[in-house]
Amino acid sequence: MKARKSLLYETFKSYMPLKKYFIENKKPLLVGLFCLLIVDFLQLLIPLVIKRTIDTLTFQTATSHILLKYGLVIIAISLVMAALRYVYRRLLFGHSRMVEEKLRNRLYNHIQKLSPSFYHRTKTGDIMARAVNDINAVRMATGMGLVALTDGLVLGLTAVGFMMVIDFRLALISIIPAPIIIYMTRILTRRMSTQYEDVQKIFSNLTERAREAFAGIRVVKAYSRENWEYEKMVQEGKAYIRGNLRLAKTIGLFFPMMAIFTNLGLAIVIWLGGRQTILGQITTGDFVAFISYLNLLTWPLMAIGWVTNLIQRGSASMRRINRVLEEVPEINEPRHPQVVAPIRGEIRLEGVGFEYPGQRGLALSGLDLTIEKGQTISLVGRVGSGKSTLLQMVPRLFDPTEGRVLIDGVDVRLMPVKRLREAIGFVTQEAVIFSDTVRNNVIFGREGISPGEFEKALSVAHIQDEVQALENGMHTILGERGITLSGGQRQRLTIARALISDPPILILDDAFSMVDTRTEEGILNQILEMRRGKTTLIVSHRVSTIRRANLIAVLDQGKLVEMGTHDKLLEQRKEYTKLYERQVLAQELEMEH
Image 1 (cartoon, rainbow, N blue to C red):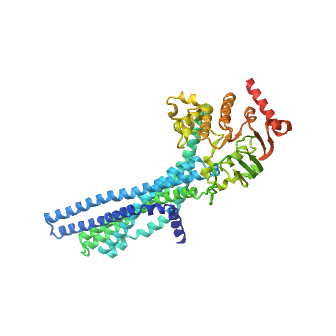
Image 2 (image 1 turned 135 degrees about the horizontal axis):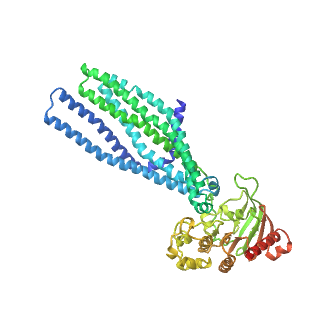
Image 3 (image 1 turned 30 degrees about the vertical axis):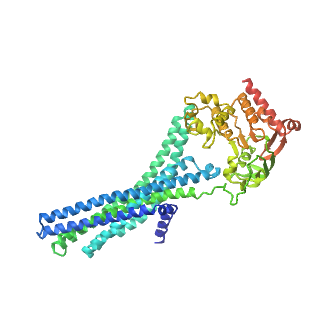
């Protein structure tokens, strides 16, 4: 008994986050449920009309007028039922669509607030499956599931009541199979709950496999690995089919089981009820009405399996969605944000250390660094030395695990996140382009950008001529992830995106890696010219770029090991000199080829 209560509790507990949507939509919901109850009540009247009709025929008191009257009553009841069915389906199914929309928006909004660590451990396909397949299962449970559950309970209990009025003993005998159905439902429900969640997990893997295959289609074709990718997809498909077939076997037991036991009840009624009719204990009309109510009871019994199916699928999906909604962002708005003047651009790191979740060792350790307003600083170091990690601390994509980051003397954790990030232009290592127009990719939803500012950003990023050469210019729709552009073009568009708001702080994290040296020099000249008096942080592997900085910070294994101007660092003959000589040699070899 406790296990059953626990299962029921866990099933409906999953739906608790939807409670507020039911409250918000309570008026249409109550009207819809009221109409549904009226329809159920009217359905129960039809057997009574049939009973009276048959009794008048049996006792030979029927006339054409009486039969016509009973026929018109049934037509009238049917017309009212049809109208009310439309109303309740419109309201209740409309409610499920509202729940779907609100839940999807809430999930999407929450996912956007989650920290990068969430995306490191969660596959994109899994997120997509929860936002599409799982939410669809919840919609079915809150729409059709709600209708069938209410309809089944009300119609079933009321039909039993009418049957007991006709003949109490016969009614009790006819519902003997009900406890067996309930017991079997309890067993199969537990199994279904687990299997539904397994199927949704497999579907997530299938979605992720398809996403990866299509996103990397050019690489797949370049290496002629289409068959290899196809076989991997086939294996995921087979796993999905196996999971669904296991689930189908469990669900498949429901409907035959319902049919057997409901028909068993019908057989009992025909045998015993027929004898009572012959003996005159009940009228022929009572017997026909009783069978009609028993047939009405068949739907609620059959609905037990179907409703259980919908509710368990929805519950399994809600558990998966709840796990995401319960994720707590690592970066939060300060409880008492500090009011700051317009950000000027002074950056100071005090004893900063950082450790990535699930990794041993610090990515940054005891790092002290001061960048004055208006300085251009270049961060150099070997791969994995902590350069990108340090840059991501400035806009609070990560918070330090020790120490603090200050801008204009204020800890960034005390600043409103939106205010902080609006003051920073960030060009990441990955050039992210969206399936939208060139203009929208550069403006990126910001308002108040004049045509002149847009053109200037394109010009500084050395992409203006190439944009004008496109079929529809800046209104050209770019392919998914900017696939219609070259790597260098994508990178320059992201540079234009960062420059268009002319932020007090600009971060260029290896932003010229796909641009040739001459173009890089031209872009950098214009950036430094337009950003006089503003702070710029650059990560680059090219000597020509590094030496342009006012200050060079050398990182090694997460620690700041050297700092100074290009000439001063060369004189010291330490880590910077080794890096510099290695890069000069690489550039010379590149030029020879």
